[in-house]
Image (cartoon, rainbow, N blue to C red; front, side, top):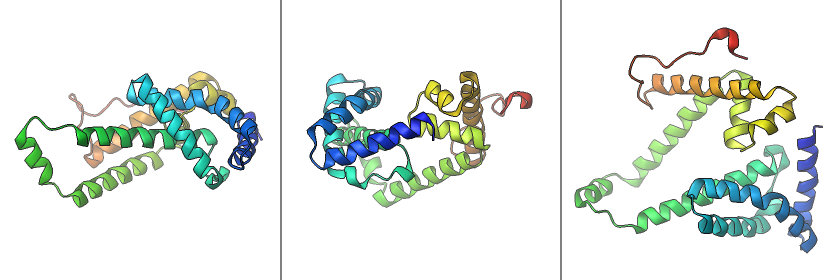
Length: 206
């Protein structure tokens, strides 16, 4: 078991104690993860006060849902990152719905699109993204999942996997390039001017 896994196991036990009412456990859990949640919330909102509100909401949600956390499905950091991003998106959607549209034609156009079609489109987009991700070589897929979905820094991933930092950055760079090519082929994004996106040199891929 590496350092990251053992640390997650310990904090998962702290989470259980916290949900059972231990204030000491809550203080330790909060001190460990609040800066991380704040970082994600601020990155999404670019508003410190709103990020603080979201951070507060997340820890209330952790208290309510903490016993549902399953270490087999991912790290605590990944679990918190998903909750935080989801809360940020919900707030942005509510704010967008509350703001009136300046263009009446835009409003009519928006009303003409049934909610079911929007949901279906979103599902197809997620499936396309998932398919592109699954098509990657194992190291590239693992690096992108760790960086973008679990929100680990490149340095944390390099230390966890005992590889050079430059190797992790290369996996992520080539993984994004390969995913982009897949999404262009599927028609989800436009092909850049000048033809196919640049393909990394084979000899440099890992």
